[in-house]
Length: 190
Image 1 (cartoon, one colour):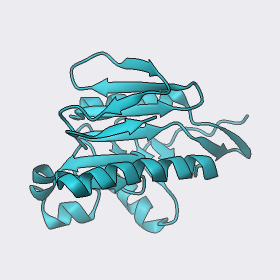
Image 2: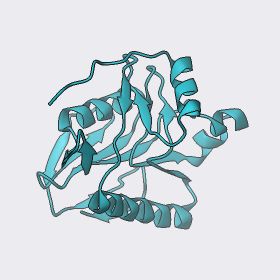
Image 3: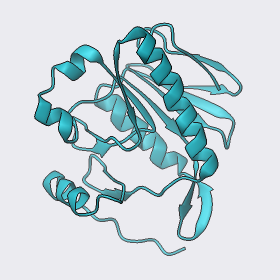
């Protein structure tokens, strides 16, 4: 497989690139590396939609925050711009942003994220997303203020639970996950 050289990009150039290519999905690491995000297949997309729906139903009942899909990226404090498969921000933190900040890439780290290790199309082949890359992304979220995150890995039948100030906990599927104090009363059967 041919690897393309890593492209480094400033935040301003990244935002301009996103404006110029609205049908493509990009992320930017804290080191300024440009990440081309490949679309996921049908199973992954369906699973992602189920996750968003579950969090959305809980949020509509509690009215505690805002839910975001994988199409919404956040400008994190350490310089990356990342989009989780599911993200949630507490209402008071969201409301503290200006309307201009809410329109662009909000300069805020979500309180909660879910990353789903899906099958993606890359270089003409279907394969699971890179686990080291997903773990690095979760570490960026934690360093930026994430309170709770789940990396769901159907390929290996595991969930990695990320909590602020704690070691990563790895649990086997099936499992019922708790939103703990971050999403009070939320549970997800995986």
